[in-house]
Length: 258
Image 1 (spheres, one colour):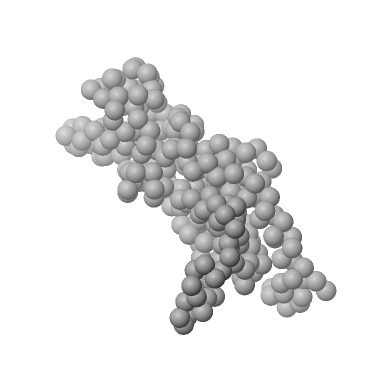
Image 2: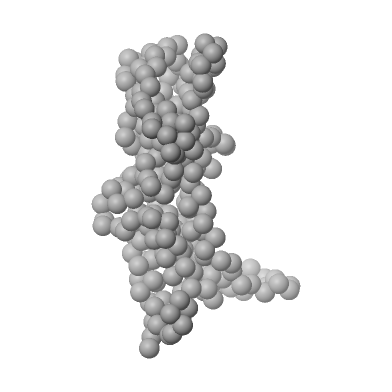
């Protein structure tokens, strides 16, 4: 198979970027998208040119590092998969393919196709820790968790923090990511002591990072490689509203319910 690639090249977040055209052939339809980029880089290095910088790690759809926008869609064609799981059979021989980094002000470009997604880490860090007894642990079955709740918590915990939801949202919102991280703890008994402070801290940190608000386009749900539901955003909004009634407003030094 042969393709024409239009790849975003940019030295750093402060430099002006450009689309660079490359022709590549001899591509097997069973190759992954990243394997195709590996071959392109081998060809560039042989010619004495700079390789294209992109991010990857596990290449098994687990880590979320392989965050590329392919033909304008985060992670490219297909549903419920990351960039590294996209096979070249998803394209037609002779296709032109546009490859860009995730676009969001909260994801500054490091170089070429690699972006800094540490804003997502800071949102998680703002949630703090879970207070659990440090002594002998209770027998697991002594804490009743219904099957429905356990399954919902597992659905939320499937989030790999790739940032596709943020890149896909017209508002640049991080609400699907944030709501998933809040829900997988807030649904379980172990996450109840900090439930209200957690949701306030994480939502406010998300806003501090410059991410927008949800207006129900549902692009995030469509782009999510783990197909996480926007129903978690609804739950987060409800918990955030409730938290204002029970948690002290530390910044103002007053109680929110006064």
